[in-house]
Image (cartoon, rainbow, N blue to C red; front, side, top):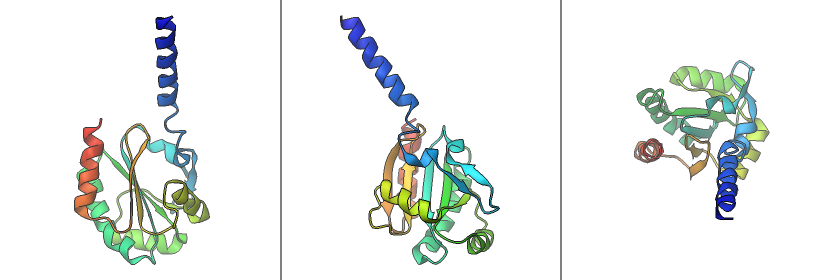
Length: 162
């Protein structure tokens, strides 16, 4: 009887682990990139992911993005930043080019506002940054401008949790 109980628990844990990406609505989402091509967010599974919701008209968003560009370069291959813009494609493309953004920028629109709320941002404020571990589990979120030190702290936690 104990063996059967342990086996059942092991199978349940295995199933939950295999469904971890499906547990957050982000991983089922497909959003257009700056060129209009649909991108499935699940393509970035397997390593820690930092999703930043932002807009070109959001001053704090514009201020924190250079930090994200620098950290994406510093941790290339170990983590993946993804920007989800609550904005129109043309100003997003202009801003991303001006800033030399080195990570994917997707156009979120209304679906991104809904997704932010599901991820704990009930007010819908920007910027909003969500941290996912290598298994796709949401482990931290930050509403408002995030500093370089705060980003580094979360990245180190993500990398040490592997």
